[in-house]
Length: 231
Length: 289
Image (cartoon, rainbow over all chains, first blue to last red; front, side):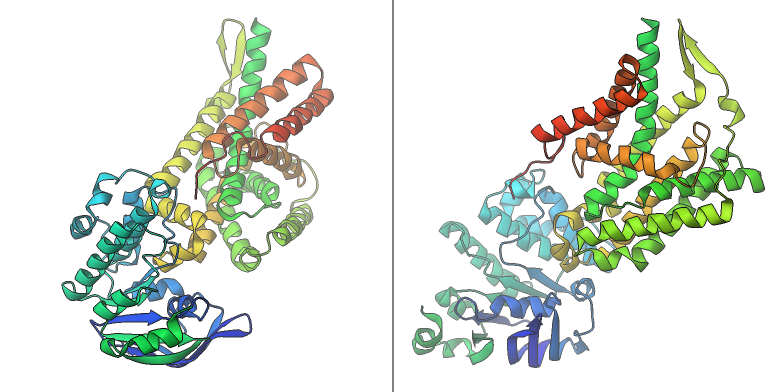
């Protein structure tokens, strides 16, 4: 459903992502791994159209994404949950979630009920400001916001970074449910190899902006981890 | 005692005009970080539009207001699309560019309408004064007071209770993520600029019965409006309103105690001192990020 062929992505004139090709099948769970600074975040930002330019081909459900502005990509059903969560600090939790619905083509603005079932803590804090939540709550809010758009695919950038362990587990469970029960395709950038192994159908390991290894979940061996992922 | 109340009312009246002029400026500055030095010329164009409608088409001030709003808003839209949007990442250059636009607009009006002062009649129904004890209040000034508050409330409603306003507030806080959630930030910016310009136009039209309409009338007004925005704190409607009241009353008070010129100096000094201690303005929004 999401496909890249010989994709280069630039900041200014520097290519950060270089000659990357991958396919994300519908309904799959794909982990993007790699050390810091190898281009994982840039890869997700490229899919959203937030880099300065690309060459090569990037398509979503058969449609060329390269020319589409960011807000149109969102309207196609690509939900992006950035690193650092980036909830709107002066918006209430409710407003933050409703913001997700702005991409919906049916024009509905109601708070989808199943979201609050997935994240009961948000229901308690609906009228609190996003900026006043803890990191873990903000992360849940960021995921809830993306779910409000009724996305086909979720792009998550290190959703468990800097979050207390009990919430990390909760978030991982939610991601698995979203993928397995709701059929939402997930592209996850993460440093957590055991979870990536457990959850993903496919993985991509980046190194210096290029794909170093790619394969099915079980091919993510200790050897691969040792070579590309340990510091 | 009468003198005191008369001065207080003069101050309030000045404040209401300041609020009308400053509101559009505050929105554009607060939302987009663009210091629009052509704002005064938007006010001036609103005044000329009102004059044109009344002198040539016989359309009175009130009936003409929506037309003036639309006219100046469209002009603002054109300037945003044609010029300002290319400079969002270069805020300092927008100052220079909008200043240039202001000069061009001023000269254009001078060429087309001539340099003479023009006058617009106030609506007949607002002739006369309201007298309470020995305090005289012109009906038109009372109307302006209520009207400016109404515009403030309408703007507040637009910003906080409508989807457009919510989108705008999202864009102000995080443009990139707003874009990622389907908000067309370019369009939001363009419409906000147009709205701010339209408000300036209305302000200009409503000032016409009180001041003569000249090509240079905007320059003085915009300076005061900037003071109001800075004192009030960027991005706060309440701050803009409070600062209008403060600057208006202070101007009236100092002018009464001293004289117009020294009074003005005193107001500016007071603002400098104020900014020294509250650099963010009186109503700056504080939140951890």
